[in-house]
Image (cartoon, rainbow, N blue to C red; front, side):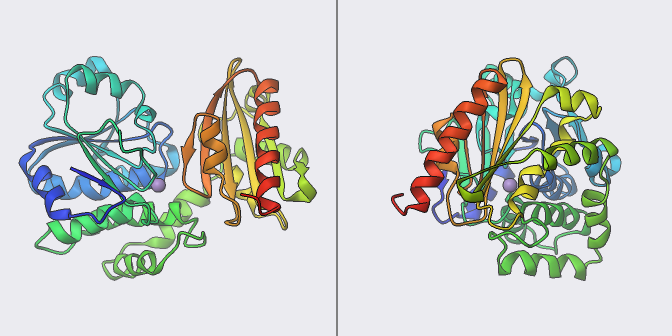
Length: 341
Ligand SMILES: [Mn+2]
C-alpha cells in the first residue's frame, strides 16, 4: 500500500491493522507532542479492541509529556528486554518519523526480523521509501490529524477521551497552539470535539508550555544575547554549544522550540539553530515564517522536513558546520529574496 500524498483509502489501512494482532507503535528519537500524541491516540483504540499493542520508542518519554503516560504506556527500547516480544510483532506502525533512520536502533531490529512496517506521517517521503505500507498526507497539520481520520473511519463508537487527549496534544504542539500556518479548520474542529468530551485543554497547554526548566531559561538568555543577523535581519542564526549545555546543566529537551522563538522576531523570515552534538556532529534546525522554503536548504545538507520547518544532522565540528550551514542559508535566502528561486 502506498499513499504517498495521494488520497488515502483508510479502509485499506484498516484492513491491514485489523489483520494484525501484535502491534508495536513507535516514533522518532527525541519525540515531540505529535509523535507521542499520535501513538497515544491509537494505542487506547487498539487496546480496547484487545490487541497485543505496545508503544516502544527509541528515546525515553520527555518530562513535559508525562501526563500522557497513565498506566505507563510508553516504553523506551531496550533490545534485551523487548526482543522476545518485538521479534514476533505482526505490524510496526511508525508515526511522524520524517526519515526512517530517526527511529535509530529500532530500524536494525525491524530489518533483522523482517517486520512489516506502516509509516503514518505528514512529512515528505521519496517513492522508494523503505516501508511495507506508506501512508503520507502532506496537507495534515499533524500526524495526530491522520490518527483522527483513521479512528473516525475505524470506530463504530465515538473516539474516547483518552485517545482525544493524545490527538489534542499532537495538534496543539505541531500547530504551535493553533498559531502556525498549517493550522486549518480541521484543527479547530478537532479541538471542539476534544472540549466536548471533556479534555482539559488548558491543562495540556500548561503541562507542555508552562513547565520550563531553569536550565532552559538560562540557555534561552544566552542564545538571545548572542543572535547573529544576516541579510538585513531576514536570517537569524544562533548556536547551542556543548559548553552552554554543560554550564546550564541542560538536556536535549530543554532546547526544543528555540528556533520557533527566534522566528518570532520582527523582520526575521528564517531562523537557523546550530546545535553541537559532539566533536564531529551538529544538529541544525530551520524555521521559516512562510515566505521562503527551508526544507530545500536542509536537503542539501542531508536532512529534510516540512517546507517551513526542517532540519538535518551534519557531520563535522562546530566551526565547520557553522561555516557550511550559515553560508548555504545566506545563499539560499538571498536568492529567494531576489525572487530567483
Ligand atoms: Mn508532526
